[in-house]
Image (cartoon, rainbow, N blue to C red; front, side):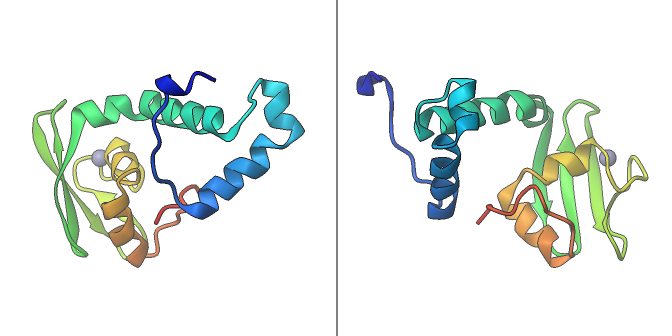
Amino acid sequence: MDKTKWQSIMLPKELVRDLEVFAESGIASSLGFTNKSQLAAFAIRDFLTKYSEYLEIYQIADYSEEKITVIDHGENQIVTLKHDGKFLRCDKDKSNYCEHIKFVLICPAVLKTVKKFGYPDENNEHRT
Ligand SMILES: [Zn+2]
């Protein structure tokens, strides 16, 4: 690895431990990964590819325990998400799981607020 082409970033310790465990597994080596940095780079690249569309279209305007306001640049409108007693509900789509809700679930600050509502977060257990 040419270390002049890499830079360090801070990650939560438990996430680094999980990366180390996976990097040392036969699964990682069978996929061609030789260290945890390659795994982290792959995961970040995958995240940016997967969510780049959301990041270009949607923007958090405001959030509180009562509601989350999203600017939808694609539709050129303001969308409000409120808790319906069980989950978030989108006023535009009249749904508990639309593109707006998927977007806010990748925003750590909003996610912290959403967790207070008891929204399931099985895919985000390492977020701090
Ligand atoms: Zn929506």
